Image (cartoon, rainbow, N blue to C red; front, side):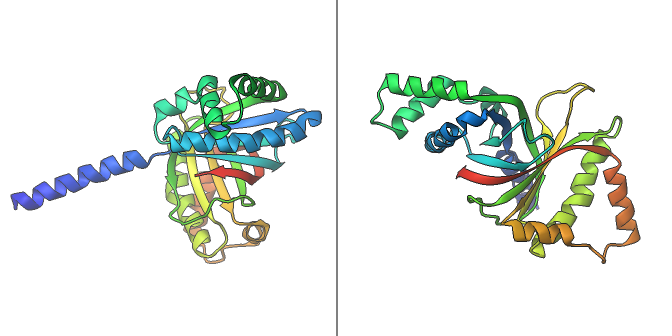
Length: 263
């Protein structure tokens, strides 16, 4: 009996540790580039993919995505979203400083000398602006085997929990909306869904508190999902969905296409 109890306790502890290890933290950087510099920036993001791949090989990050915006609250504000994935909140907040990025650039491009690397970064920093950066912690995600590759679509939905309904909204996403998205994935209407909370303390004037990430393999799947109506949903389920919707304000929705990815 003692051995059984021992193994049960060990199993629970291991499950807790494993769950903690799998928690993902993400930095979302919304990028604005002037129109006359878009071509140069396209070249720069190709370089960045190689640099972030070196950071991934060095276990500094878990992954990196570069998205091109198709639509949003104000298309003139941003053209791209860059997402860097971490497995540790300290790594996320520390980020990759310029010195580290230059070191990885030297590894990725051994034919460039130090002055060339420095010049490349100064030009890149001058051509883009990041008016919005979000530090997020993934709370829950669907069970799927979605393949991240260039061409997939994503809807970045920025949410703000209504005053006094923070916990109610999170419960709604986890207990009501996640099962709906999981069923949609099993029906081939979606590829992946995840729910994220801001990782930094925010005041009442914060523009958003959460983010949902909805991924689709292509436009066909995306439009099929928009046209689908779940006629099997019960009256009680519809009531819970409406309560969940009323617990938050959907601030912005950005539709984007994946252009570069590191995993």
